[in-house]
Image (cartoon, rainbow, N blue to C red; front, side, top):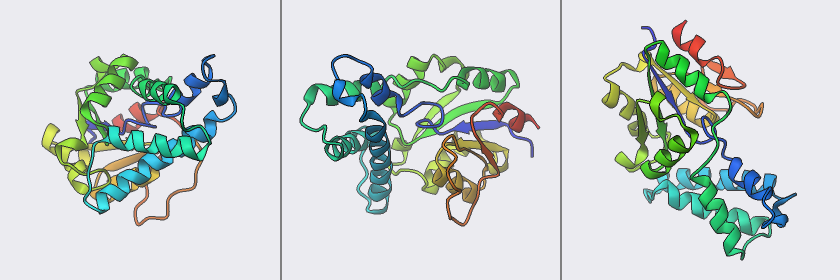
Length: 228
């Protein structure tokens, strides 16, 4: 069946998760970040994801804002930047205003002009997602922001992917699911979606039972894939 619905992961896919540390590093108040921000951003993101997986498999769910804070605290300690309350507060504030990747607005406009459904499906809590979408100015080109909070478990649990069909009344093979996380693209492939992995960093494909249908370097080709 033709694609009717394009679903996007949020963090790292539409929104640049390294932007908070990068912006803070450019501010005079935080000279200690000048050289340390890339490592901080990498550790923060990795721990954030690891904590979602651990909480999912141990049935210890909390919202994404909590794991974002927990991941940052670990990363700050790991990079020797802990103990600075002002820095922590600034990084967390910036996470609510993450920059969208440059190609995102035009890509989403093209999908809407083609008559397709568009939505976010994210581990993020509703308030976090709404803040990021508004900050990026893409509210008018998204039909919805679907959050795992409605089912109380993080991706890649199938109950999260179920939210797409429940919201849009579409079959699995009508969905193009797009994520920058290889494990998320793999999970969605196993679920039955057509998938595109946005591999911005040129990483190897995850050794999992399922592989994404498409591997991209950015989001620019998505409208063409969705309407082919």
